Image 1 (tube, one colour):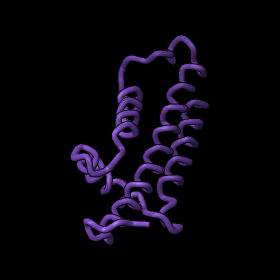
Image 2 (cartoon, helix red, strand yellow):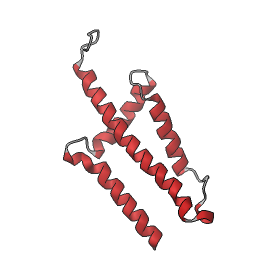
Image 3 (cartoon, helix red, strand yellow):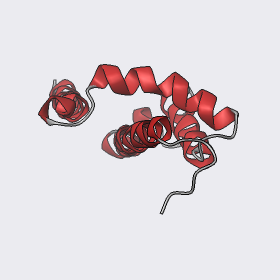
Image 4 (spheres, one colour):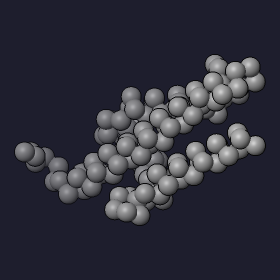
Length: 118
């Protein structure tokens, strides 16, 4: 029961953070829609997010992988801590990187190719 309450509280906090776009920044829908564009721009070399995307991909694989470096069955609370840390870092990274990408995308759309920005 306590595990369920902790997970519910964690997911509620994450949900509030992801929907914070209603207060001025991009919303969750805009961020999710930006992810494929960000991956494509990174793969084509237009956007410099390669290392950050690789780290987010590794974190996602770690979280969804059935293998766990610190198993919950043996270490209970400590087994969940590594997963919580990874999910928190991943959520923050996605928020920060989509903000950065959307700002880059907006600047790119207003710049004429071949001009120098100061």
